[in-house]
Length: 299
Image (cartoon, rainbow, N blue to C red; front, side, top):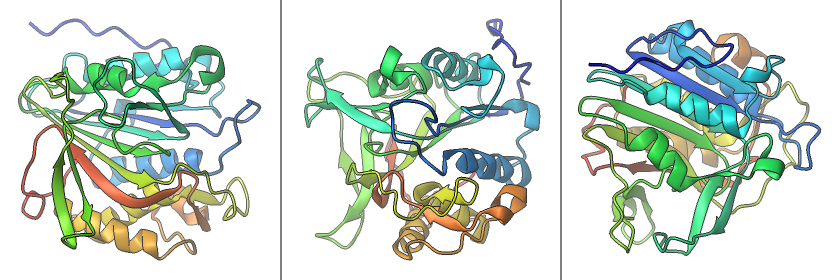
């Protein structure tokens, strides 16, 4: 029996087989440095999901600091509730998307799970008051509940986001071998970080941890570099594989700033690409290894 859904206050969201939570935070009027790009990231991602992948508008929950409804503000509690809404009652055939565009941090790991001794985390709007959301919690919230036949894609444009879902395997460009290779990132203490039979994929990037603010002409004309490369790669070749997607993203990111060339109402008004997350290389993490050059990408 499927458990009853706990409603998100102020959000009468649908329960279609395709559901998404999109979070974009500028940190306006906070102690953090204001970012230009996250709101447009969310708008462009929503267009991609609804126009290219068949997501219904009422199945896409958006949290940004431009929302006037307090229940749609990207606070720590609201993001937690949104993650719960995303996966609650998931069943075979569900396609889920979690997007976060904003600030990320690292904090010392107290559990002994992290190979580098640091936890990755995302910063809600009220992170200075309530603290960040750690990768351990994100894994428990939206990775562990995935049952057989459910697939989650997470697209995170933030510094220190490479392992922010704590997934056990990471696929990156190897300078030694000149190609994409899997790397085992399972915790040294044996902690389980997988799903309950489903699949979880994180598309993020390795970053230098430095926010880059020098490519921002105006608050309404900018999109994040990692998000831009992802959306543009998908729009240029919708029927692609995961391996080709990463390669295309890498090429687009190495082109640097310049014209955005994204589709849709939001994309049409965007003029510049801003690497506010400091991402240098796109990368993919997964709950299980697979043939990235054969597996078709679809959300």
